Image (cartoon, rainbow, N blue to C red; front, side, top):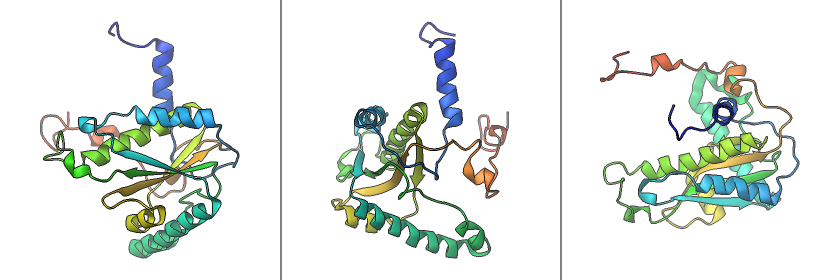
Length: 216
């Protein structure tokens, strides 16, 4: 333990929020107070970013009609995904994949335009802009869980169609539709585990030493 460590209680809270974060699909309506939403977005904005480029842009969707059009884009992709899954298509269609019309807030997280001019940290790994935005989304997710709010990351949409719907400039790209708000309860385990869709692998199977595939 170092002098810079948090207290045991503070550390326990950090690990708890990480362990209890869930990708939520079931929401209880309600609202998110403006000051709370601002606090959550500030948490997202404090994320690390390669070269301090801060590639994230968040669009708050306040028009109900626009929510409906976003949900329709998701539904269209849900059907296409089911077709691509073949023998698991029926099983997939039974899953609840979004809560766009049920949650208190909908945010679209997008990569900014003109990213090519940011070279620092991206010359050989241009996808680090996406990694930076993902860090911002994770910050928002963890902060929301700590505040008792659920959040779900929806990625079932055609990026160009959503970009056109929301008037994104050329080069910008939507990465996530984020559903945010009160929930009746948090899932005791990831929903896809509870639904029998997949099982998580233990860390021991994903951790190597020195070389790929060499276990500790």
